[in-house]
Image 1 (spheres, chains in turn blue, red):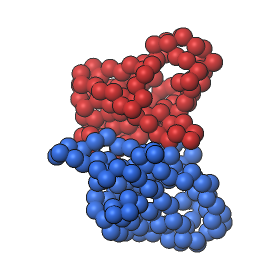
Image 2 (tube, chains in turn orange, green):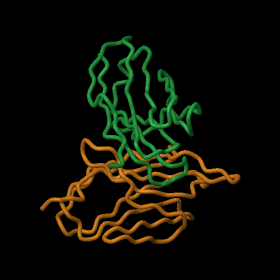
Image 3 (cartoon, chains in turn red, yellow):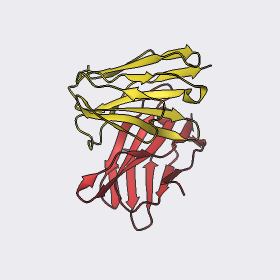
Image 4 (tube, helix red, strand yellow):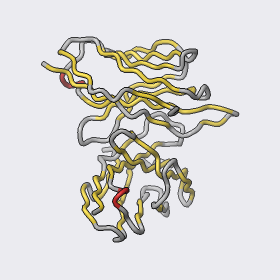
Amino acid sequence: QKEVEQDPGPLSVPEGAIVSLNCTYSNSAFQYFMWYRQYSRKGPELLMYTYSSGNKEDGRFTAQVDKSSKYISLFIRDSQPSDSATYLCAMRTYAGGSQGNLIFGKGTKLSVKP
Amino acid sequence: EAQVTQNPRYLITVTGKKLTVTCSQNMNHEYMSWYRQDPGLGLRQIYYSMNVEVTDKGDVPEGYKVSRKEKRNFPLILESPSPNQTSLYFCASSLFRTQETQYFGPGTRLLVL
């Protein structure tokens, strides 16, 4: 079982839809969770990060972490064509007072149609 | 403008011909890292550097070398490239290793024939 699982999609939605992107993980030592957005022919850029279970909201984006289920989600409200990109989840362990390197999911390709 | 630059952006080479991909950042970041991105495999870390003269292996270091002689530069060296190193390569930097915001370069697309 891979450490981080992410459905690669592609996911196609109409403009204005609510988008749900998800990752599951197997390592309970993962404590820091991030979402990166990667436009075509560009490097990834950090979208959101969270340390704890629960929800974190930033504009149209909400990151949700459920550590008991080892499941994280990114919700995009009122999706726009400019949201069309590949979304990568990433996570980092924390154990013994030390943080590990980032482990990335494979990415989900999202297309928002006008 | 704060940025990470990589050169070249595109490279076609042949098996066994040594090549270097340069990476430079202008943010005085201590931590720099190289990733490769492959379809179906995602982004995987090759090497990272915590500071000048301090480097360590990531998840897929075989066939690669790095050096960190200056804080701003972190070149990736392929001594004898092979076709399985055909990939999209990203350099990234951050102030320290555990900082969430890593700044990624624009990528280098490498094809090894």
